[in-house]
Structure formats: structure tokens, C-alpha cells
Length: 543
Image (cartoon, rainbow, N blue to C red):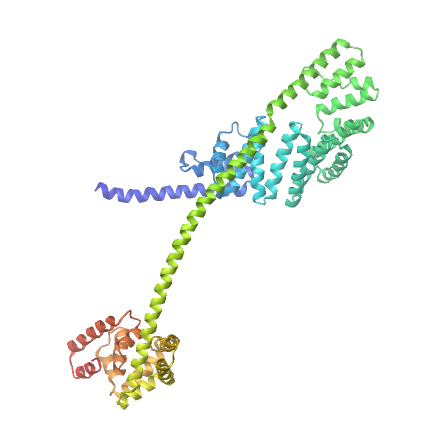
């Protein structure tokens, strides 16, 4: 009884597990489809998942990736990287899911950058970028190039920054969505500024300023104006710089640093009283430009002690930046990444060799099987041809019988095909190419077989002709035996015409003549059991 219960319970549990997996898979698919346009709905769906019910590593990896992506999309990055790191490690060795592997590397990179770990972030973005390029995914190639560009900006690697800004712009230009194109163009403008190509930076930003006005995007417009002002400031064109910084200080998009820059510019113009209005609070403001403004103001006011203190603050900030830049060791990241790529290529080559070995083994097995089946097919065809030739000779021999009634029956049944078969059989003994002659005979016999097996009109015609020459034998037989199967009636009909057992086996679609013998024996027994005045007439044609 306990075993019987298990037999019922186990399938039920299996169905429940499959249903749960199906429901989870459906949530994941829906969350992915909503990610781009409705990330809030995607996040809500993912938060409804019972993580304890995720049984497979694949489900847990996909859940970690999608949840991290949805959190970033909703400007709520996760507190730690445990989920996305587990997802990244899962997809790392799986070439069959390159897209999820690419996304896992990208969002792991985002987490590392959020923690100011630019080395590991760069490593992940480079890996994700290569995967995007391999997949010809312009969008994600652009996204990764943008992140790499930002890392190089933050770490003062301006040549590499410009190279990846150009890559970002080219990819988003191919992708075609304006919002991404504009962001990439802004990164390109910043990279030109960082490489002291200020005229190009200003020209690009003027294009973007028109775009910001068109879309009424104040924040983006503020960033563009700030970059124009900064380029003018770097060029020493203080009047133009002051003009744009004044715009920023009166804009909702303005920052405290804009006021500090305006103060510095005004001081450069000799407007000390106006510059003093922008003196920052040294305790609440720690940006470098604010320190420079305080230093310049103190010097202008002959406050030497305060100027020295501020200069010390500036030196400490610069030393901190230098130390942080050295500690980040981006060259080491490149070295590690190249080592990773070399190791990965070796692993791929090894996997390819293993796969190639199994493919070769499989090919040998398939070829061997094909040769074996080919030989079997050839043997079957030869046997079929020999059998068909035997049937053709049987038909020819039947025509040599001195029974005019039988001859008339056969001629009515075969028509012009008999003459064709007769000529081919004669050719069989006269031609040196016996194989070709046999094939032609076999083809003619195949046509006859189809006619006598499938053509209901021809079969009805043969039955009528047999009735006319044998005193209604078919009608009587069907009346006496109304419940026989079709092949029994055909066996009786072909026996009337005197076909050999080999010919009847072909007409009935039987594998060999033994099937004809067995069927004829059963039919004779039924006739004898039935008895009656027609028994001898029926048995006479069954001999």
C-alpha cells in the first residue's frame, strides 16, 4: 500500500515542481521583456519571486543578474555585489549564453565602479565589451565603451578616454537612438577638452546645446554649458567663461562649483569685490576649484597665512589624487585582462579539440552506419529486383498455358504491359547487360503491383471479368463470406488468375511468400468449415 501511494505521490510532486519552474521561467521572461521600457514593473516582478524556490544554479544566476539590472535601471543599485558576482561566475564558463554573460560582466563592473574599484571595473567592462563586439551588439558595445571612457576620465588616462569615447559614439550612431548618441557626443566633447583640444570640445557642445533646447532638458543643457565654460576657462578666455558661468549660477541646473569657477574668473578679470561674493565656506566645500578660489582671494587680500593654509590643503588634495591614481594600477588591469584572454583562448582551443575529436568519432559512426544501411538497401533492392523478375517470368509462363480462358483473363488484366514484360524477359536472356534488363523488368512489375494493390477500379474490373468466365464465382464468394478482410478477397481473386505465391505476396504487400501460404491455409480452412455446394469450386482455384 505504501509503495502504491508513492507511485501516485511522486508524479504529483514532479508536476508541481515543473509548474513552479514554468511559473518562475515566465516571470524571468516577462521581467527581461519589460526591462528596457518599464524597469519599475520588471523590478516588481522580480521581487515577487520566492528565492527559496529557485532550485537550479541557472535560475539563481539569472535571478541575480536580472535583479541587479532592474535595480540599476531604477537608480537603486544593490548594497553589495554578492548576487551579481555569483551570476558572473556562473556565466563565465558558458559560451552558449554569451548575452547573459556579457550583461553579468557589465553590471559587475558597475558595482565595482560604485565602490571606486576601477581596476576590477575596467577588467569587467573590457570583457563585456569584447562579448558585445563578438555578438555585433552595437548598443551594449556602446554602453561598455562609455563606462570604460568614464573610468579613464576618472583616472586621468585621457588618450584612452578619447579612444573609447570615439568607439562609444560610433556604436551608438549605428544603434540609432538619439538620447544615447547625444550622451556619447558629450563624452567625446569631454575627451577633447581633457586632451586640450578646446576648440573641438566647444564646437561639439554647441551642437548639444541646441539639442538640449529642442528637448527642453535643463540638466543636460547645464552639463553642456558647464563644459563650454570650462573649455573657455582653460583657454584663458575669461570673458566668455564668465558669460557661461553666470548663466549656470542663475540656472536650476547650477552647482556650487559653478559659483566657485565664476569667482575665480572674476578674480582673473580684476573684479575682486564681485569675486568675494563667491567665497566658499572652507568647512562645507572641499572641491579643488573652491580651494583655488580661496587661495587666490587670500592672496589678493594679502592674507598670507590663510593663503598658505589653503595651499597646503591643495597640495594634500593633489597628493591624495596621485596616490589614489597609482594605487588603482590600471596597467595591472590590462595585464590581468590580457592574461585572462590568453587563458580563455587556450581553454577554448582545448574545448574545440575535444569537440572536434567527438565530432570525428561521430562522423565515423555516421559514415559506418550509412555504409551499413547503404549495403542493406542495395541488398534489399537486389532481392526486390530478383523477386520482381521472378514474378515477371511467372506472368510470362502463365501466358504459355494452353488454357484459352486463362489467357483471356490475364490479357484482360495486363493489357499492353504483358507485351512489354514479354519483350523485357526475352531481352534478359539476349543482352550482355543483365543488371540493366532486370531493373527495367522490376520497374514494370512495380507499376503492376501499384495497379493491382491500389486501383479499386481495376480490381473491380478483374472481379467482374472473373465472374463472367467462372459462373459468378466472385459474387458467390462474397455472399458466402461477407466478413473477410480485403486481402483475403484479393488472395482469392489472384488465385483465380493463377498468379504465383511470389507475385501475390508482392500484390498484397507481404514481406515473403510464407505470409501467402499462411493466409491461403486459413482461407481454405474457412471454406471447408463453411461447406456448401460452392466449396469444391472455391477450393479448386485455391490449389
